[in-house]
Length: 356
Image (cartoon, helix red, strand yellow):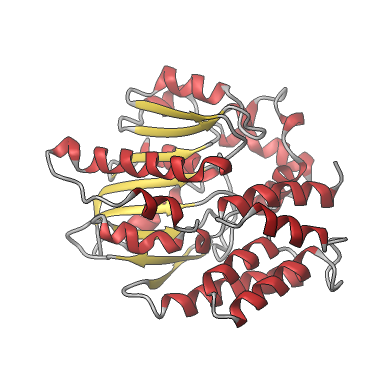
């Protein structure tokens, strides 16, 4: 599969995951003929123009979806960098008309960590939402009003190297979660933190939970654990876009350097046995990125782990509503029902229809 066709294939999945119709995504993709920066028919130019059209009619969240795809899979050229800025700025415009969504920015020794947040209060348990290697925080931030309504101090941020997070992604990136909890210590109950950490950020969350007792539960979707990073027989099956994105985020010179680095990310059975909290994991039976052996390892090493498996590809984009309902229900059960409290309820439609 050539570069452009692989881009289009993954974009169809990510467009669906953001709530965009398959028909609309297909129509846009037919107009894209290349991935050359500056060309009006290029990947970034066409998606950005669609975002501009949505913004002009006042649909700012729809504009954000298009800008997020324009900068996909990472913003390494001028056109994608512009789309990245537009995505952030347009979401900022949208949230200013909402009640209580605020922007946070922290200076980490290795770079900047930016977040959108709602419901921050020292009496509320903290919920951190983080996407994977290609998803920016603006894709998940529209959920903030709902998460606040459910009783959380909610913060949406990005994996190191993604979006506005300027830290490099590396084997020690899990430490940025502890850094974030330290910075939020006076604005939420960080000693009762839940992690809704999707894909590669689920790996960070489990590694951090092995060391940081403030993390009390981890919910994830398609997280790599060990085999993805260390199994040399699996690596040839990894999509080119995934490999190239990881090369960029880790700032590896080439794929050879990346391959040499990745085994250092792998979680050991000893580390996983230190994760003495509930882990809830959505898996996809046709996952083209994460090997099924990750589930086997987690079953052998974690004391409290449950899986929800969908017949789908990585991230289960065709089951977005069902996936979100399962994750939120598990989150509420673990956080409230186990303590004998009544979790606040949200309608199935509210969980299913909110954009990601």
